[in-house]
Image: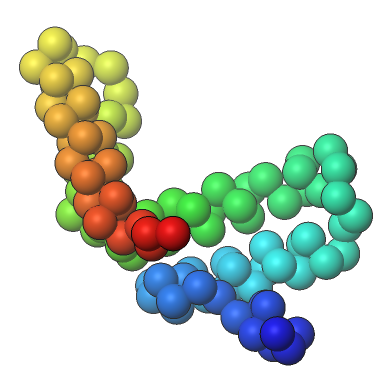
Length: 99
């Protein structure tokens, strides 16, 4: 595998600007040696990339979770949040590769 193939974003990362986040995270990992320092330094990029890829893969479900689970609220809202999380989980499972 060539260096450019290793640093190429996964297919889903090419959507919605995730490719830039992927390259930034790869650069962060290249610049900082493995360990707690890297984890701390790259944490926000890792989280941002994960959120971008989830939103790219399941936009409606991701938006529903973001909207319904952003704060506490009533018992009804908490149930809606749980249903939204389940829908997102199901959607994401359809994108998993089988090994």
